[in-house]
Length: 140
Image (cartoon, rainbow, N blue to C red; front, side, top):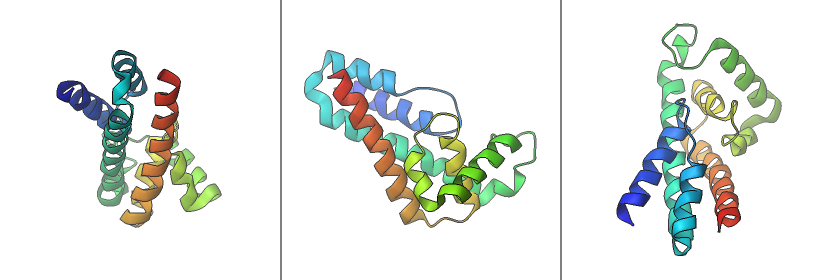
């Protein structure tokens, strides 16, 4: 159990950063083999994914002024798209940080716009947990 959940945590963490990977498949695979792990697996995936989003927030907060540099992992187009979402929907847009394409850049932009850590983490964690609960219930 420990190795499987550690792998799920790591995959969920990496999936929340700007690196492309998917943790939903790992969660579903674990639950198909061990349906009794439903809530521990959801908790581990949610925590890992939420902490991965914190990396993006920190990246935006402390390195966001480098967004136009080639080495910065968020393209200027991704930045503009995420800023548009954030300005359109405000702080509540962080509930959708789990979305593909716009979600990860949104967490970087939240750091760049100096969104406080507590509201950032609560909203991101709520959205990501809701997504994992949905995936887990569909897999179980």
